[in-house]
Image (cartoon, rainbow, N blue to C red; front, top):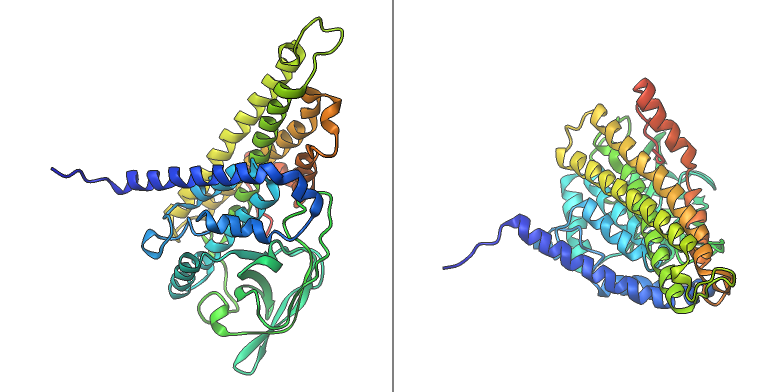
Length: 402
């Protein structure tokens, strides 16, 4: 007698296997995280590590060579990787979001072709989408084709990517492009040297008369004069959910590192009357406080993932009301994970003691990474959106930040 495994059970097994692979990669990254943070090199080897672990194509269908995970599940992997290295989790979280853009804005044929290529070649996607800084990227007609020109101040993973997900302005409207990294006229500026997220390859880029074909512009004709549907505007919650997960994953990993170090190296305070730091009631209180806050924030992140996945599963008929509820759920998680992760990364030294501030340990990288990215878009505006929805039932207005 044969036993048939249901598709749901099969998917859960594939998800569990992907989580195990992510945990193994996170452990490997953690072992060298401080050293690599100091070196500030392009993350070529790290992206290859993700590729070798079959983590780049998890969201693509099984029949194409992927793992068939849904978007919320893929961002759970981002959280696991953040426990080892926030920079690489940043790259992976953006990558997963950018892989879904063709399914929101492209034709079915474009989405299928890109999915097949993602799975078969294990492509890594960089993003040129931050609308702030530099000149606008403008797409113009050039005979039967198009040309892209402009500069952006921030572009994560662009110089180490196989493909680029790009936003540009075309005849006054926002368009999304999918371009190969080696396209003519594209230049990464190599100027990323910030205090945190040092391995995200997030410096400026420039496009100079870059040729673009019609097939590389996502969507059906005509390209201009379109209103985005509520379903398409889920593009921004995709990115925001990635942020939520690598913030809280960083806090989880930082606490685990701090506790390991404390067990091995911390000394009891001289007036405590104790033989070991792990028995100090003040340390125990702080550990309990941070653990409770991190656990609560992680649960809120899970809720946000469930909300976005439910909206995606609902499909193109999603209403504006449903979109608003989804965006607010993610804004709530973004606000809380920002506050909790920053506090945890700052207060861990109170558990470990002064010796843990030695630069060779690199424990400060957790706070530097979080502080660098959490000002990506001010979290106060997320709180305001939640408040406006709660009090006035005014929905967050779609932009590339909300």
